[in-house]
Length: 225
Ligand SMILES: CC(C)(COP(=O)(O)OP(=O)(O)OC[C@H]1O[C@@H](n2cnc3c(N)ncnc32)[C@H](O)[C@@H]1OP(=O)(O)O)[C@@H](O)C(=O)NCCC(=O)NCCS
Image 1: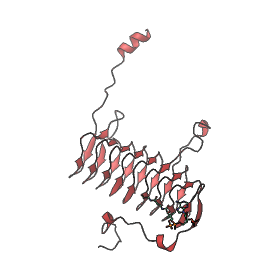
Image 2: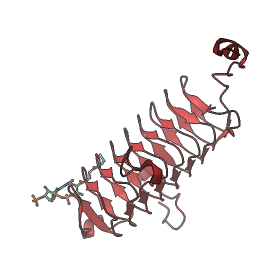
Image 3: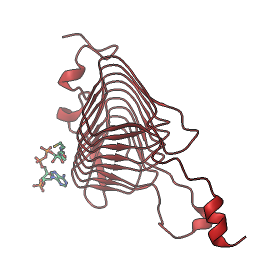
Image 4: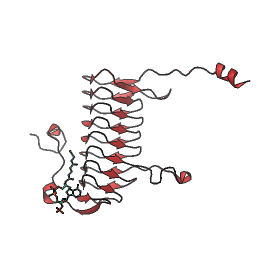
């Protein structure tokens, strides 16, 4: 069979496929969003909890699980096999490139890049323009390639424009200063700053737990206000 004939007999790909999503009550989804982008035939519907607010230009893939009171800014992309807890906000232009785990009560600001295999704990703040990486030697040593994203433990703060190298673990309540390049694990409750980042104990004034005004009274164990 000639190449031309074989092309003619191939079934046309059903594309674009219809989005697949199960959306909880009270969602506000702007026109111009794709909720449950179907990237393959056997993708499971996106699960989106109650009270979601999804702003124009956002694309949420199928095979994604998102809890209640989720919010996006504009032009957010969240790819497949990502798991997100409750009360999470993802700012405009941020890309979450799939297979990412995000706990509840997390704020991710605008224009961040989060590659596969990143894990983000509760009460984490990620400042604008933060770049996380998961491939230490891009396009090198491909026979040993194993993507490994950063791990951000509970209560971590990452300042704007910081870069986190593959596989670094940012310890509980640690604080990464704006513009830092983190090349090594940061112990709990340390301040990491500079390029490459050096560590020092967090000043007393920054030891309090991360708490957004909108989370008040919602986190188990926190005093109601
Ligand atoms: C690291 C940080 C917490 C320090 O704040 P601070 O305790 O008030 O520190 P100061 O501004 O008094 O600066 C103390 C010293 O640290 C230096 N410094 C401050 N921020 C720095 C940073 N991001 N990287 C490197 N050095 C920094 C200052 O130049 C100063 O140095 P000097 O003593 O030699 O003059 C703060 O600067 C920071 O980076 N916060 C994150 C901001 C952010 O990204 N927010 C995102 C939401 S918009």
